[in-house]
Image (cartoon, rainbow, N blue to C red; front, side, top):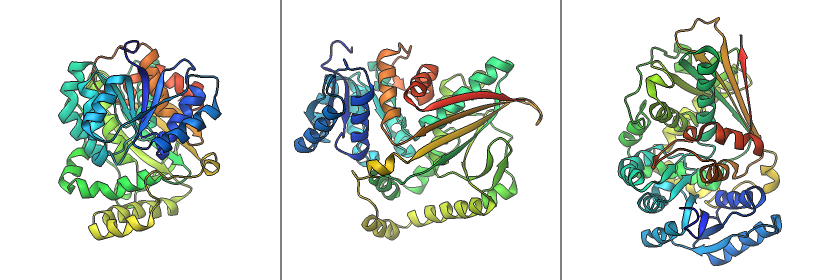
Length: 405
């Protein structure tokens, strides 16, 4: 399919904050013979992005410019021109469906950087059959939400299988990151409850709601202290608390469990939890109740309306100088199924300094050139396995694994 279409990759929404980062990363880091385009509604804005890409790397094939609205007809025409489309236009629950539908129906591979689990659930219900029938490899949530924890979990499960010939009983992931949110991320948070009811959100985020098969009934439950105050201390990870992205990442990890063998793959008693790493117990408690308060306030329409007046607007984000100082680190511990507390554990760490479009861009080139044996369907980041991890590691998102005895 790649050779028969005009482009190998199209970045849709390339004049926005995330889209521009992705286009710049492609210009600097992906193969110079790549046939690609940037797409959006504004010719002048896209020309400015193209000029920046050329300045970054003049000795490569430069991106073509494609003008496309958010209309279904325009996006169907765009999808037919490319092997793979990267959609960076959010909030996806408002603007994302036409691009998803166009790719599913036209045999075009698709990636996005959403964190809107209820929307992803809706897209799976509506378009998984079309994606399967037409050979479209579609992976939503392959940005910072939710690629790193999904890949770390896959890596831990693989290590435990290889080193101990065992299934995995529990994976705990901690996230530690610096920086500020982009305008698009803030707009998504403020619009989520306008679009989906509390019932829809609860259903999409319920355990294994996105898994293609029923999930395990885990016997692991958090302690009373963790349930009330959010605090959990794990020797290999430190002091942890409630993670804002945990609600977003867990459904994807649980879908990976179902897609990659379920009980015979990850394990029949598999359990995943994600936390935020903090300095001490005081910060853990403050962070936990801060998140609880934020969710309460976001459930009130008036609060969301007021919030839109004061937050960064979609398309904006941290400055390049500020972004270079950002960093993201995930750590994970994997325990063997039915193991004692003294049994050896698998450890995985993934860290990246800076803010770029690395994750989604490297996923795109991996799908195009790494020979994945995937048929059409709606997948998860972990479905790209070690080949994707190797690409990320080589690109600077460093993964390391070890065994703790």
